[in-house]
Image (cartoon, rainbow, N blue to C red; front, side, top):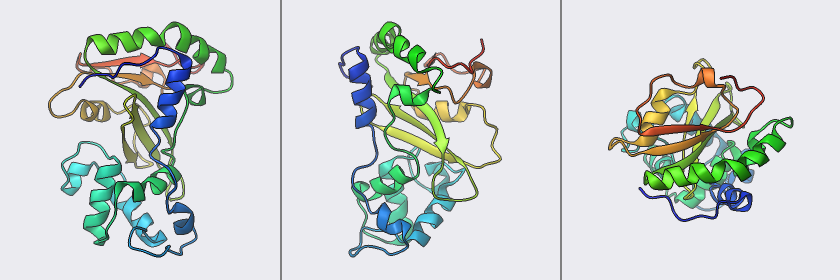
Length: 229
């Protein structure tokens, strides 16, 4: 896969992060109240919670789908299969947005003490990250995690948003080791072993990164006051 040509500026990075949103206007506000809107393209609140429970801690291929990680399309396919409803990926967008998979700008990935450091990194170091990814003909992702919204027991949503507007994710059970999962990175690279570059936000210190990953997976640290090493 080839990284698209981009401007190496903070503005373009912020634009990417806005564009990678899975959202848009969705049915989630109505679903949150438990009253499905008219038409076949809305899940009830019960169905939404059942869907979350079904994919929690599981990858798409665990449930008979072909994808390595969850996306709008694979969630749509699974929801159609499970509930026999006529859904489209745009119908799922609002649910994913409400779960915490909305757009995030680079400075949103840092604590208040690190915002200036992140801004400097975007100006000074990020253009080189983009050049490296281009030279390797690699997909470039931003990886982070957030707490799953609107469901219990609590869990984290681990997501990878590419600069081409694609987002892959998994919902991890509360009992899972908080370290950055090696399995997630391998699945991001895909069965064919595509080269990927990934910017890792401050959700993990370097000590929580996997120690042994293939050379085709290149990790870059977003500045964080919690980082060591």
